[in-house]
Amino acid sequence: MGRVKITVEGFKCERCGHEWIPRNKEDHPRVCPKCKSPYWDKPRKSKK
Ligand SMILES: [Zn+2]
Image (cartoon, rainbow, N blue to C red; front, side, top):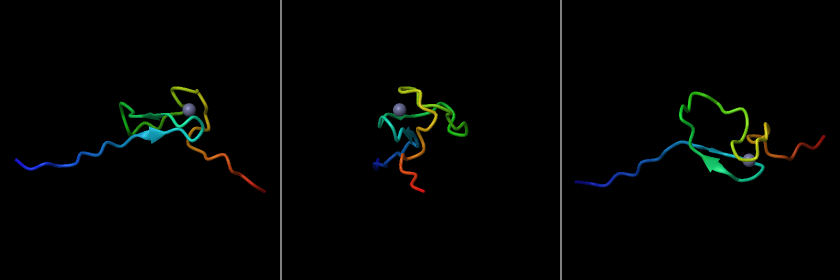
């Protein structure tokens, strides 16, 4: 049989770099499970 590449969609914390796969990808995590940052999905460069 052939080989296929299975890509699993996951999340990566912009703060600590932690990567994880959510149980339910429809459910957007509020905080990083590792560093508990609520800003895990927001890169820390906001210049105004
Ligand atoms: Zn984190």
